[in-house]
Length: 363
Image 1 (cartoon, helix red, strand yellow):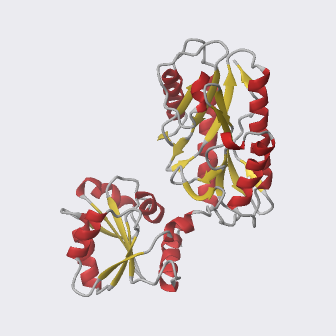
Image 2 (cartoon, rainbow, N blue to C red):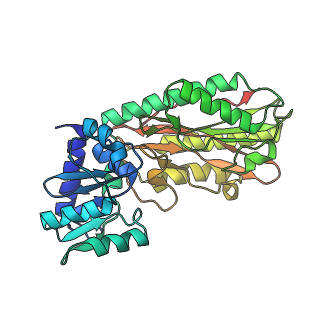
Image 3 (tube, helix red, strand yellow):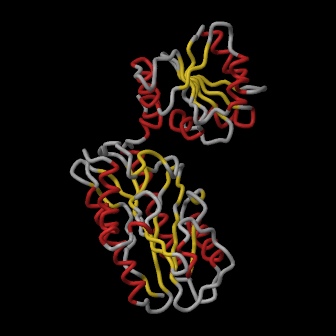
């Protein structure tokens, strides 16, 4: 049995068992493209999957017919009209009654159209998180892809860092990072690359601008690569010149928090406990109010997956999960620091996949 076949079997098992949050269903309509890719390998822009107790049907349009016929290993349907009409046809032919759907990925208009298309006696049932729960734990093949993505990302960073000079614009650096990622094998950045300098580093998700690097600027780079569908994520800090004591103290506090978060990662602890380990260090340094986001997140086929490494997430970490650890502290009109690694939960603790040094680089 291939890995894709096993994934589909796991969904079938989940549908047959049912829980209070995920009731039993005759089928699950998968509309999240990341989830469709997880089950079928399809990487296009228009596809649906319908998982039944005995088989999986994949639907796409004629633009992807040739590619799908060569790669899809489940039941393939090339629809000349709306995909939902083709789905409804299978529901009718297979006499399926209770159709589960992903509520986060089916908007109200799509839901109503599908409801109108279904045969008499068939109904729609929201069943959230079935595939996302399975995706939290990565297979060895997925972990290998993430490792490769991490290496490409770090190499792109290292090569770009050597090219940074005073007077470069934030968007120039972002463009170079994206170019180097692609040059070394990435299909695209995992997200819009973040480059912020000076006081703009206090904006956690700053978009690169025309701001030119000046002497004594703090520089924050948050970047990730997408390689064969799998993501990586890393944030590093640099300084143009010699940092002041205040800047160095801020960096050291965030680094201490990040290392504490990593040290807390192991099977059996909750995501909230990891968050608390990092957050507690920043509180000790009087920076807890300047830490305005969660400590991290899962990643894989999407840059943000479960679990969320946050205050209230009770997800228990398991070996095979891949998460980020990225505490930060942001001070208005001064600047901010964030340090982030991609981390694999292992049987005995964790492994930091990011090879790039966390040393505070002086450019």
